[in-house]
Length: 247
Image (cartoon, rainbow, N blue to C red):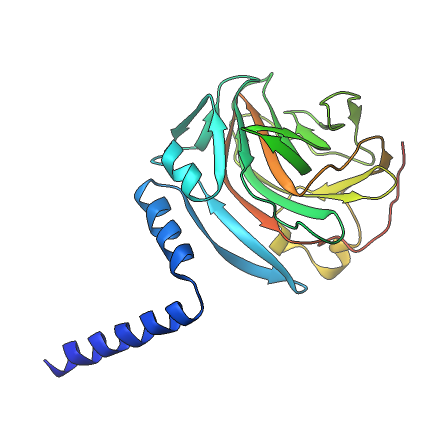
């Protein structure tokens, strides 16, 4: 009986603390998202940069997406996560991740390409209308990575040595976009948390001065025969080096 009373007291104290921090809305949103499969939580910061994690298990629903701040169209859920069937399969954030300050955005995404003609577009520094995002974008293909501008045109191969994602294999890429003389776009074919200090200043693939506007601070995705298992969005930059390659 004493143990029960202690637990009740601790729970009550914890609730009061949460109320004082105005976190009730966030807690309610998290509980709602959990009930609909999708979930969100804080990820470990990197060099003081705060990061938010989003997970899309097989029972993630459209209501669950909305509960964690995303909207989607022509998407399904399966063991690989949120899955798209074609070029009209899209997902976008409902809120800005960094509404003020420098437009430097990092997006870590764990994904699978499901066909030889599949691709995943990762769009940052973006504005959105529904599930459609406008901003500079990476197009991850089975054999390479290309980049496109805010209108999904001007496709170009990214500099240095873009990795081959292949098909049917889950991958995690750490991607970053800076508003610098257009768009500075670079990244690594591993989780951001796995990068050493040296690697954070030595980009695996990198193009600067790409002709694109950076209209906002939302994110979006095109899942053309592709799946997203999870993502982590950062409030600022993780890469530390200047540009190496330019277009």
